[in-house]
Length: 135
Image 1 (cartoon, rainbow, N blue to C red):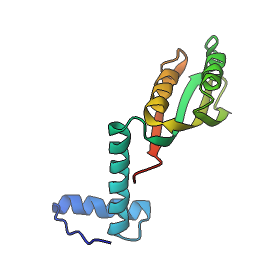
Image 2: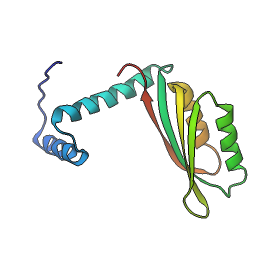
Image 3: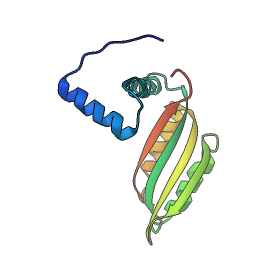
Image 4: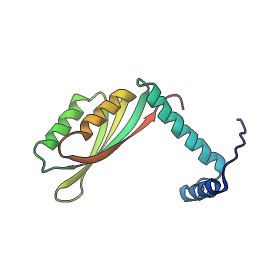
């Protein structure tokens, strides 16, 4: 293990200490390691589109929107090689939330997610990619 020494502005150090406490880190080193791993992971999936990853895709949609439920299910079936699992919940009379666990090359996962999020009836959503190698 290597020891690194860094210097940061007082205000930034104070904010970082607050983050450490809020997130329950035992010390600064653990917090910095997590930040570095997260940034390296993002860099890997951006620079290497074939990097194997796992991801969660979460989106809200109006199930009254004509055919959206069928279109979303069809997309998951058409990409069964990427789709590991899905969880669906009814939030109210109109709104549903779905979280899909995906696994595959980062660019294929990203393309699938963008296709889902672009569907008519999908109100909003987000993708969280985590590389399986390199970090």
